[in-house]
Image (cartoon, rainbow, N blue to C red):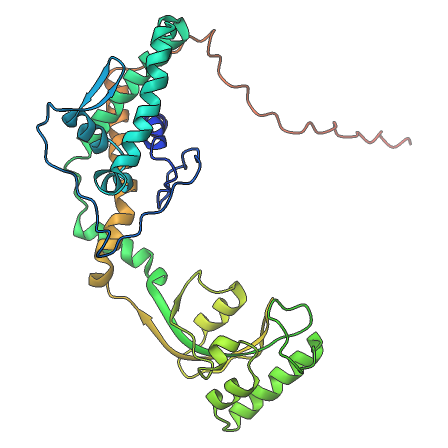
Length: 337
């Protein structure tokens, strides 16, 4: 069914030139970028005018598209496209539909729709449309239970954990952070020794923020006393993240090495977003998986009731994977007595 959906939506999505969907489906081929629309008081969001549904809004030769047909086409697009297509991207969508229809009309004049290849592709496109319609109908009233959402939250709870921390960075030769003007380009060993000395000063009572402002090679956080914005898993380099999430509030790390240098990390707090706060995000994450699960279950039921038949000669089963042949064991000749 994934094949059916992606095959069906490919043509629809591709007419929205220059737009990139936010998520996870495979991207459509990219066309030349189009000018960006900047919304402001002078340039508000464009809203679709209300016109009679049978009004012809696109004419290309003998092909005519009504307002109802145009809107129905938009409603069949992936959700991430629909708002744009109903609003500021409406004209752009129409212009690209015109290009498609212009080519289609010429193809019809050349009777390309009479070829066997076209008829077969048209047939499979029809089947795709039917399959997609049933998948949509199956998931129309899809509900995710509160218990399932809660279970998902517990299984992915660490993804909603944030750490608030400070750090002091001591760069070394080859670091991605530029060396400060007038500062020595420290070797790895020199940077580690400096980081260890700074850590000892802080342990002995020196103010973390004061040292960060004076010594940190991270100019951005250093100016704020080493303060970093709260971060979640996957937002920092692995060594830094592992150390920060392992520390308890108030704990100071040993020097932690990354491609930037050596970090002295002080964790301020750990926080986990409560279930209620991320409930909507969890449901949005779960919907594609639950939707696919529902369709897969339907396919299994339908196949059980009406099994498919594949011609065994035309579709022979795949050859089994053969293990690497092993040489026969060497037999030791019997001892001669």
